[in-house]
Amino acid sequence: MSSPLISVAQLRAALAQDPAPALLDVRFDVLAGALRADYERAHIPGAAFVDLDADLAGEPGAGGRHPLPEPAVFIAAMRRSGVRRAQPVVVYDDAGGVMAARAWWLLRHYGQRSVTLLDGGLSAWVADAGELQAGSVAPEPGDFEGVPGSMPVLDADAAADLARRAVLLDVRQPERYRGEIEPLDPVAGHIPGARNRSTRDNLDAAGRFLDPGALREAFGRVGAVDGSDVGVYCGSGVTAAHAVLALEVAGIRAALYPGSWSGWVADPSRPVATGEG
Image (cartoon, rainbow, N blue to C red; front, side):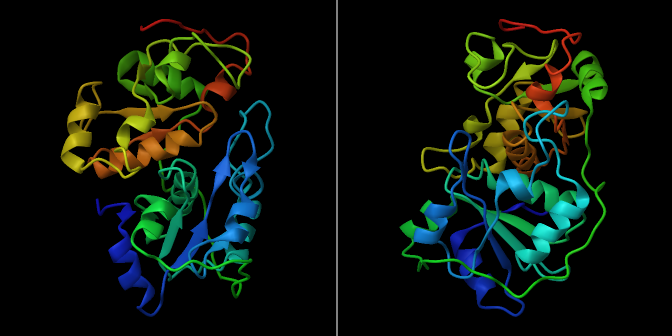
């Protein structure tokens, strides 16, 4: 697997090529929502803003807080953002890629051939004296198209089965996994049999991904190794995409449970575990 990450230096070189990559700014906050005002103050030149709630997720409900969007919604958003089928795409945020990874995953799911996440995000760009642009960008509409199905996906039953027989990773913070706190969903705990490794542990202090070897070693400690059957979930399926990306950096393919914990607890008949096991 080629790396799903692109460095600032690599992005600079790519922007000088023809075709240059489409740039998607996916800044978002769980409580504040889409950070469009931050984007309009300063973004990488040429980047189009993508609203995670409106463009990369469906309506909250039985499928969780951020279910996958309807294909027509996602395709329209990508075309509006200037994404073309034969063009590379680079996505970024300012949160270590935790939000932008949802766009990376969806584009891959729809078969986009070249899509990468800017390692370190906007902070890395600024730290390297990258130029910034204010206002909004309205790119020429793209011709993006596709059908979902290129990335492995789990539903609730498949996630439960994977937790019993293989490796299902809960990538929320440990205190949420253990059920000690739950700030967003009505029930605390985790899917029985799931193992915990916070997606934040995939980043260094500067918000960049650990190197592949370090990630392989860390994932190996929770049983996720190359060739193993691995699934990932979080609270609403957004940060889990970040973990899928980190696993790919490590050379491990993993399935995403988009409903994640918020979708799991939408059905009160599903079992809940607390504590470490």
